Length: 639
Image (cartoon, rainbow, N blue to C red; front, side, top):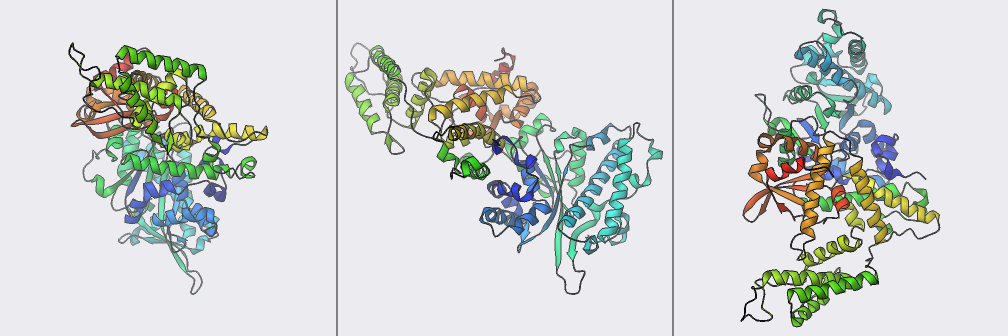
């Protein structure tokens, strides 16, 4: 049985209509709408950065011209209408027509080879940018051709002042433009393919001659060949994907070249954090801005638009939006599974049961005995216990009373909190003194009780569609990897003539196992140290979570913001490890978190680590720490 959750849409859906059918409009709106409405997506260099699986390539493919034309051909179909609206908000579609001529150039092919040539950096950069420009021109014309546009009906509109040099790129018409671009690409390809790099004096003139179409082209006009024919103006867009594979110096040089204000074409660079220095990567995440350019004459705000394709900014809003996007995406994938769609099982939440799975009767007796023992040990009066019990009876979760086992665990937590908050016993003390602060049945007590039952009795904790979304750390690929095992199990049950609904116990078991498998499969740079660091943090979080009074259910460590800012200089090893931990979804940084009159940067554990170690999915709980303490975890024995 083919399970589309196990594959990435942009890698296996070659047909544009099939690709569009599984793409959710939510990321387009969330990440790009504001910049698109202001025009900042097209009048300057746009840097899109994110973790693997954050949707970088999917977004890039959406803005390619063939994708836009395919979307508009099907705009009357309800499946595509929301996406048409989202791309319209971003300025890619106007008046039911494409307004950008986008092409995507993957830089993971042969562009880094230029940096291995024995030439001066300026010459190497010139050769690479000439190839990028030639291939972009050919891609634009190829996309127009696939849409049925004759090259003779394509005309270049040069920017003001560049009319006298248009012959260097072949002229204004599409035919001559393509001929010149092919000659440049062929010459450069021969240089790259040579066994030995030719001497500078032997480089072909087509490779080293004047060829700067990005400097010359302002607009592309299509049509107008026949009298009265409508002319379609298009803004060229070059999307350079996977820029992180370039040499760091090469990446910086390319960024500087693309950030020039005189360029009129739209240009995007898409990359992970791998290519950056640790201080640049960490600042890009914590400030949602790239490191200020080290070269003069460039203003970060005026020449570069930075878009961070991962969790940052308002966290509650991010989580809500990701839940909506993930549910929409899951529905689109389920409709591609005939076994389930034929039974109208196209809502993932309908396959995930949310009924409580209480502990066994024998375990409940053991729990009750431990609660009684705690009451005796803590010397809690029967009247006080009875008051706590009535408070728990009135506590509601989703309008429902809590199950008996959770009620017992909550009672234990409340008695231990009471013990912490009452005055120390003296000879003349009251047998039932009032605590310094009230002890009530509240969500904090409830969550602590559930986690205590998880670690003591393995009571199911991770289940339901919202837990599945939250465990994905706002990352589409991680969501698909987790959802895949659940959908596969549901489909298997259907094949065996059983209900497709998965119990809470089954979901919990599958999610924890899958989270552990994903961690074990990490093979990115510094993965061993990232695994060691996150395991050390998780163990400490589990210790605090299991404290009897449940005062904190942490899933993060907090470092004072001023210490974190100095991290690359004070603890460069930790900064380097964190860079890759963030780049590959093992850790999320939450800067400028205000607590107790101090400003913290939280190192929040990723969803896979939370699943493996059984930590709380709710955000905000963190262990106060320091850069020194966190750095020392890298020296501890591995997990």
